[in-house]
Amino acid sequence: MTPNELKSLVFETVTAPSLAARKVMAFDAPQAALWLGLILMAALHGIYYGILLPGAAKAGLVMPAMANAPLLIAGLLLSIFVVMAYLMAMSGRLLGGVGDFAAMMKVTIWLQAMRLLAQVVISTLSLISPALGWVAMMAVGLWGIFILLTFVATAHEFEVIKAVGVIVMTFFATIIVLSTLMTVFGVATPPTTGGL
Image (tube, rainbow, N blue to C red; front, side):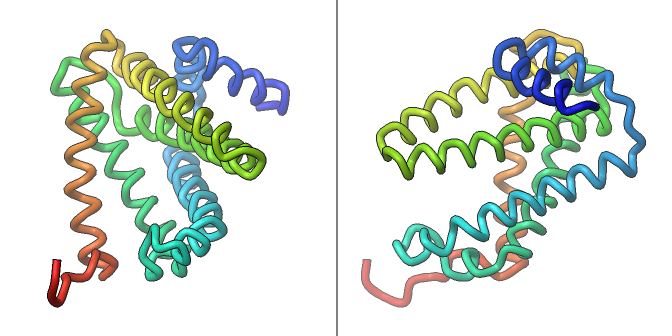
């Protein structure tokens, strides 16, 4: 894929997500390349959060254990990406879809790349104007949901309403998995020792 094709796909993901989803689904990549893509996305997100979270930890917004462990964050994110791709494939099949794990890996890789790009833009805007950053975050969040639903529906070749079911099932299952992983890795919120 050339730089111009990549820029075109980014633009189409925002303005014509159905068309972009078909292009992503048509991208021929071996399974090993898809796994590398997931690992790369987890690593890049880990780097981003490694830069962002120390300041948030000082403000008391996140636990220091998470803020100072970018490798741990990347590992958790990779686990979440894999689980999400698997759950989107399986839940979609339950609803009559045709998308497999590889298709959902493509969806996850591309949309996580778009998410990272959006986060960098929002962070930059927030430095200029917190209010502008907040507006951008809300707009990206709302439109991002529609883009995700469109990609899932396209991958499974069914209507968007079924994609809603896929995302709801995946969301709750991923929360359970994330909570379990955080407990296993010892980064869950410690219990209080007294008071309210």
